[in-house]
Image 1 (tube, rainbow, N blue to C red):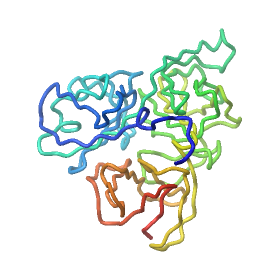
Image 2 (tube, helix red, strand yellow):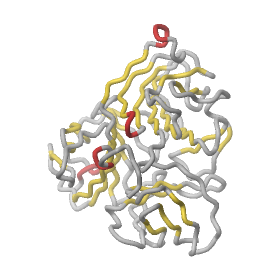
Image 3 (cartoon, rainbow, N blue to C red):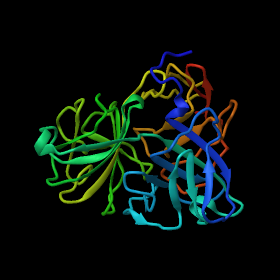
Length: 318
């Protein structure tokens, strides 16, 4: 068993499959029975229909919906997600979360410790920030309003340097900008498109154990509200890696040091869809139930994408 400081990974991340029934005020409970998990970030997708992804977090609140496959602004949706519950969540009758005769997957992450930084008082960063943090699992949700747009720093609360940050302007139709450590600070991936990595986005200075830097018109815009999902690698629990494809069904093996529950893949050099696979939609190999974060498409099973192994995953597609 891989070493990890996290005794039980499902105390911090869970996956739920359920069938929609178009019922109002419907409580959904996680499958795990050993302990409860109150989620702080929930990501929904209908597996069987051409429907947008939908994302909520506890910092913005259950009414405030964002769409991963869209550059659109945050929407007020009173009949989608009702609440983040002690051991799950409550949904309403809308097709995006609970349509009749539709099958859904929901991914949920726990943060849970309130976070606030007054930059002028603490001298940490340039811009005030607040949110919720799970330092043990390397995850924080940070809300900030930029007072100036370029090369300004924001506290993230993780206590270590972030490896991945997803940024979304809440009030303007800007793309989702995704920092990824392997690409460096002058590049980003765009969650809502299939495009290759683009240059520009995350400033010029090194991220630190306390702050990250933003850049005008990408990860920050003066006077406008943003949400940032920050991730730091944790041994035995999360891994952020790169690999080179070989164009063969006997593809590369990507070591993680543990058996993955969820894998997200993006080609950084060409315009190809993002891919999400997980161990609830495929409980055995080969893993072929793919969803695409940049697309409304239903689940696709046409490609044997990969195998989950005890220490990573093995690519099975060209």
